[in-house]
Length: 182
Image (cartoon, rainbow, N blue to C red):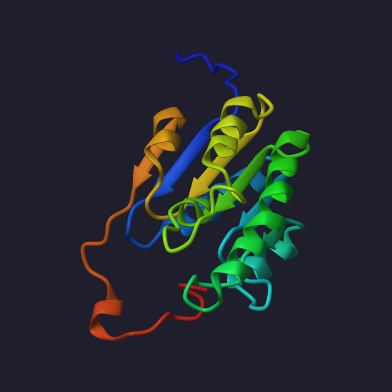
């Protein structure tokens, strides 16, 4: 017989270039909600100017998804993206450190940290992300998604899943599908 051990909150990373990183994290949110977890989701690239299927569904379950971004990096100026990150990162950090939530998803945080077309370390310092992971309240489960996860984050995470694409309909010219991608 296996004895259940109470564990501290885990840090889970979903990365890679395949589809399913956000979808996996949303599955965890759903599971957590079912177990009575208080859940909050921050999306670092997605813009509040658009509506996403996960946002519609989770709102019905009383879960807030906060879009901190302004869209893909090629749709706005570097200054606009930097400002969104400068304003958004403290909100996410505060929610994690508040201890108010049992599960927090930082969706596409890895994507934001991987931006190399313009400087971001002064508005979203990797050192602060590392500090947040190491010092979050002990009960908080933290999920970080997005391509190109920094090695420093992977090194301190409890779980790292790399999702790779073997085949994708994008390559056949099929655009993003409502209800599947957004």
